[in-house]
Amino acid sequence: MKILLVEDEPKVASFLHQGLTEQHHTVDLAADGVLGLRLAQANSYDLLILDTLLPGLSGLEVCRQVRAHDTSVPILMLTALGETDDKIRGLDAGADDYLVKPFAFQELLARIRALTRRRHDSPSANSVLRLADLSLDPSRKLVQRAGQTIQLTAREFALLEYLLRSQNRVVSRVDILEHVWETSFDTGSNVIDVYINFLRKKLDKDFTPKLIHTLVGMGYVMKEE
Image 1 (cartoon, rainbow, N blue to C red):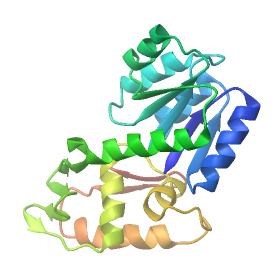
Image 2 (cartoon, rainbow, N blue to C red; image 1 turned 180 degrees about the horizontal axis):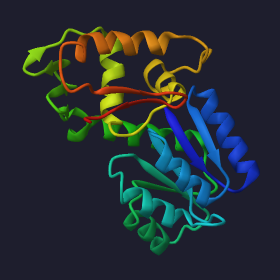
Image 3 (tube, helix red, strand yellow; image 1 turned 90 degrees about the horizontal axis):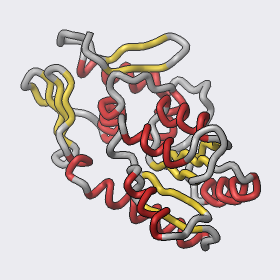
């Protein structure tokens, strides 16, 4: 998974970053709430881990602002504040779970598994994705454009699903590698371009409007012009 960790205590941040990376997650780290919010709004994450007491902008405010635009990403709050009222404030701000410091790393991993399992089991995870006359049904593994069924390989399907879930937002080649290939291999490789071309030939070549667009030096975006 791609995880955003917003934690201002260097030792805690380093420990969590190392532990999550060893579990094969990709982790972006922010040491204050302002940077954390900026990263959350500019990128697509599978999970946000927010400390409550942050410089610049509190974890609660980061959570509220993220939730104003993204109701699906799981958010886990970390805090030294263990009072019931503090937990209620965190949950009311939009957090999905609350973990009080100090905690065992294995418990954090269990909470992460539960949150992501809940997300994948939710109706929204299996909802049909649509853009113009293109539709993708995750549960049936069915893609159609203008009523015609489009045959895709498993990797093409995964790439299209990621692009559709990020529609109208630019995604970089690194984002695609981490979410679709779940790796960060040599970004000089042209594997992304090859698969984007595969999708264009199947989805855009014989249809209008064109839905897959390249932003030179930035990445790709699916949108209806």
